[in-house]
Length: 163
Ligand code: RP5
Image (cartoon, protein in one colour):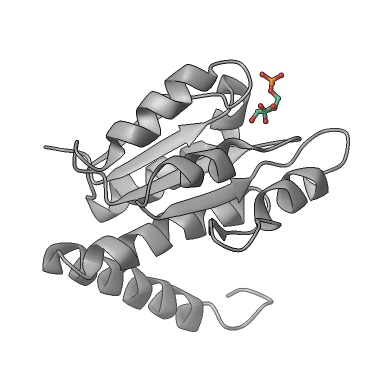
């Protein structure tokens, strides 16, 4: 099935975080692809990826990067497909560097920026599901089901002391 969501990341070292986005999309049954594309180490590949994203059918791109995290912003600069940025938690500055690099875009080229780390990766996938759900009812229903299950599991375990 043609991928609707592209997950890209600056390095294989980002996979430990970005796998949560892939796993969440998997759970929702949303076709996606995963690839390492570095803004700094493989800039030509990044340009090609962004320039061909729309014609190959991608409706959302999730881009994760750490440190000088230019991948989401540069991707957004080269395509009108919505880009969701996930700041990867860096070792030196704990991801604050990644967050600021991704979130502080100049007016004109937006990147939807999520939280640092695992929560951001999961939420990027859920937001991507919301976006593709505007066009594909199946994925809207899958997302509603996911949320319903989450609500039920929180209600079932609402005594913090456990049972
Ligand atoms: C960024 O530099 C990547 O997104 C990664 O988070 C960070 C470190 O990359 P590696 O040195 O682990 O390859 O480009």
